Image (cartoon, rainbow, N blue to C red; front, side, top):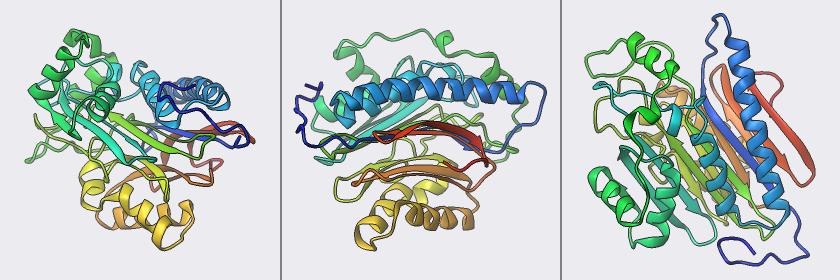
Length: 319
């Protein structure tokens, strides 16, 4: 039985899992290809673990949380351990999770000292009557629930510190030049047909303190409904918020009867028209998976009951 307490029906065996590790443009520098492969290796290991859990009957909401936790624990992504610095040289984390069976959701933002933001988001979903907690209130809730905080230097990595030093801030505090890769997310369909999605990020390098992106906004960076699909987004958060990207994809699948790929393509074209770059991963109620992006790179991977693990970064081959 899964942590969610729901027993799978033995006649249902189809399951699917997709994960991402951020989108953007390839950074051509010595060691770039090796760095890409290191990230793909992490994605492969996370997919392998998720595949074992789903095949054994684990609930989709458990699997997406576990997948995102594993990616948060890696220093190679802009979430958890590898989170970027804001304009004051601090880390502010955010995450969200949604259960497509019940439409329950939890979200957290402006976190400091929280090792696994996605787990705190799930605690908000399951242990409070609320959907969204942020800042001091979210941190106090974490401590009340027994979550140990980590020191600020836990999040320090050479890559994120170098990005802070190299970032040029515009008048609004927005970073110029290629955005960093690294927001992480997962979507899954379990053997019961239940869908779930989760997303976590450290935001953008040099962001203004208190800035919140799409990763913690239900309907923008994360959405899941058994009536349509589960979605996790990555990219320029402000545009994904303005387009309600994740919910828009689900609505197109549910009401316009589009395939996940067609719905994702339509929303990403809208994002692009507003100057946004990024990508999405989608799994629908039948288990069909789509990974789509409008830039030069998105770290992504998929696996299912009938499909072996596949990972990719650049636009070759499409997954």
